[in-house]
Each structure stands twice: as structure tokens, then as C-alpha cells.
Length: 471
Image (cartoon, rainbow, N blue to C red; front, side):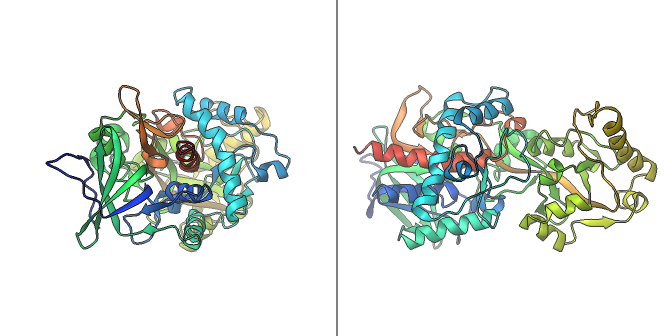
């Protein structure tokens, strides 16, 4: 299916909207946000249909690790993990340096726990807490995942529940028209794969479609530092929501915010889990030198890696860290693809990197020195080490990649789309990649899991708002 050409159409005698069918709630996009919104609407007795451009629902979620941060869930409480909405909000604000939306931080932090609990209680989602280590920026263990620990598994569970409940998920259906009348959505236009057009009226529309990571023009305009980076997200992120927003006169916000990742294996094209860094791994450039604090965050690490010679780096770790990495299916896949290489000593490791043995030796020795003389603190980058890296060594060649954007349509705490004058549209909602996130306007504002936080919390809020509007 071709790239979208999103249009806002105004119903008028000269351009009349003629629907063939009515839907209570139309949802654009069958990713995590769209499908979870459909499930929450089903729980509230509200019929909906989900329109998906691809043959099979996938989206950015399937390409992610599938980890969702949430405080005060049933699962977290069962493990006696002390957390709170306030602590989560504090972590979000600390990561974004106060530049994120305070309104949405509070709204999403408050909604995400109930959202995940509802999926557990009503739909059998068997959440687990990742408690082997803390992801960058999180004060406590609050990252939730299904046992398979992959985004593909998360998408499969969402889709299977939608199918079991008989929720229409119409694939190969490209939404490219939003029809408006008197500042209210009245319907959508769909182009099928054969070129035929169908139009549906609706009581409410939820945009869960995408960000703009797959639109080179918008990337060049809003985040030019990533215009030459690998795009590791879903090609469907073509910026439809942004373009619809411009056509509507809606407010757009935080378009400079995005999630990068500093460990995209090359040439294999697979994500190397940042859990390695949190367990003690390091990154070095082609000179065998470290160049940043690897524990600050994987998003801003993408920019740091891209600054290095050849825009590449090597993740270096030892046997103990390798074994811990094997708990993650994505890492197992990277090992099977031979992206992860093993070396008996520093000499063979330096040959692989292309640096001198002395250089890599000095880098590894400096960690030992810091552990002995400075409580593990590296004064140059500000990282504190808990252990040295010892032979045999493992290495993965990586680059920095763009995963998904964090800016989008400005929404209020009811997930309603806001116009430039601050007016909230009555029946147009946005969540996930279509909406402004909580990462602020820069790459360093991304707290681990913010993408799926926005997807699941925003979808839950939208469903609750639609239900409330009917009471």
C-alpha cells in the first residue's frame, strides 16, 4: 500500500460526505494504542472498529522490547515494590529536565496502572516486572512485560484478544480522509488496496496511527540531527497525524522530541538490549576509547554514537554480562545472527575494533583503577562502575538509530485534540505516536518506556473520556 496522503475534508453542499456505514468509534491504527483502546471501549460496552493500513497489525510496538513502565499495578504491589504516581511523575520530570507537559505527565502516570490492571483482569495479560536491574532514570522496578519479553508477543496478545471479542480490525485499509462539520468529526474516508474508497460516519475518532519517523521531510525539518541516521521504526510512521493536525489548525507540540537508541547492531539490523550497559558493559569508538556515560539513557546515546568516527561504536562486555543478556529474546537472536562476537583477549578484541591493543587495554584498565581509587567513579564521563570487565570479551558493532518520534498533536488530560486557540475538539482524540508525549522537545528527555507509556495510558484515557461523554 502506498504512503498516505492525509486530508481534512469539510462537509458542504459542494463536497458532500456520503457514508456507507456508521461506526460508534473509529480508531486509526492497530498498534498497541489502537488495539488497547478498542479493548477498553469493549469493556465499557462501546462498539468500535480499528482501521490498519498494513496486511498484519505491527507498528512500532512489534519492533520494541514491549516493556511498559507503570506504578502501583496489581503486579507491582504483589511484589511489595514501593512506588507511587508522584514518584513516577518525578522521574519523568527529572529526565525531561522539566520541559515535558506537566499535565500529561500527571495524567499518564495516573492512568497507566489502571490501564495495565484492566488488561490483566479483563483480558488475561500476565504481566511480569523486570527486576534484574533499573532502567535509566527509573527510581524503582516498574517496567512491565509479558513473559515472552518481546514487542511481537505484546502485539500478538492484543490482536488475539480483539479477534476473540469480535472487534473489527480492518487491515489493508488506509485512512486518508477526516471529515469535519462545525468543528466536529463526522467520519473518515478509507482507501482499500484495490484503490476503492469507502466512507464511514462515526460518533468519535481516535488517532492512534503513528509518529513521523518514516517521513524524511519532517525529520529534516524537526530533528535534522537524525536525518542520516538509520530509521529502525515502522515505515508506517509517515506523519499522518501531524499533517492532519496542520489541516485542522490543531496545536502541535514537542516535535523535536524522539526516541533514539545507541545500540543498533550493524550490519545485522537488530537491537542490542541496553540492559548490558546497566549491568556494566561499555561503549568504545574506533580508537578504543569510551566517549559518554552509558547509563544516562539509550535514547541520547544514539546522538553520541553518531558523533563518533564512521558513526559507529562497539559495545564491550564480559561473560557474566553476556549470560545476563541471554535472558532477553532479542539478544538471543542477535547472538544467533553472529552480531555478538567473542574474543579471548584484548589483542584479538583490538584487532576486531581496528584500534591499538594499548588503547583498548588502557580503557579497560581505567575502570579497574576507578574501582580501586575512586569508588568506581569515572571523573571524565560521570559514570560509576560496580565491576570491571574481564576476559573473555564480547563485542557488538553498533550505530545510533531513530526509533520513533515523541512530538505530535497537542492533547489535554482527556486525550482530546487541542486547537491552536486552546479549544478541545469534542470528539477527536489522539494517543500513542499521534499525540504529544511526555519526553519534552529533545532526545535526552526520553525516559525508558515513554513510547509505550503514551500508547497505553493515552488509549485508556481516550476510552474513559468517550464513555464519560455518553453519561
